[in-house]
Image 1 (cartoon, helix red, strand yellow):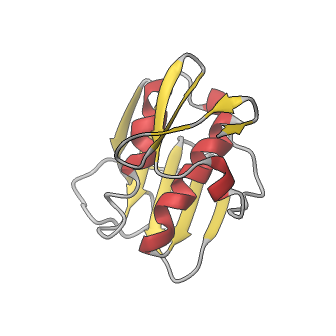
Image 2: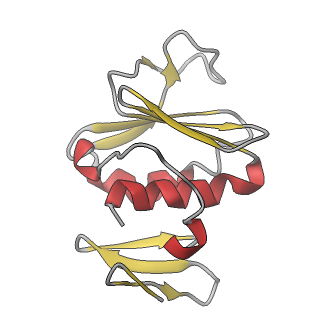
Amino acid sequence: ITYNNIEFTRTANGLWQFEYLNRLFVVRYNPEETKDVIFDFAYPISNLYNKPLYYVTDDESAGNIQEIIQNIAPFASRSQEVCLSGKECRNPDLVEKSCSDNIIIMHNSEEIKTYKEENCVSIEAPLNNQLIVSDALIFNLLGI
């Protein structure tokens, strides 16, 4: 399909790939499939250029956040799992960071919620919806 003048091609294993910003992206859903996921904020990829990208997750969501990290981390100087200051952490040995840093937070929840507080972008969603919301965030970050 073509979306915003970007060609999305389905691969043999059912994923979608597209070239943008001189880079190949691989996602599970295309923008047409994610259009019902609403973000009431913009979080441009330029916020991450050459800065660390941190992420926080619960045990159930740890695998799903990798969709975002694999596609977005190359724009950052590095990526790392951390604990969010003042919140319960699944691994207390991790470094603690606050929302003054670029952090993507993903947690298992009964309903879909996306919101931004300072530099923290939060995704709360049922496990079976986390990948579609992750891909919607990737498109949001890229301005697609």
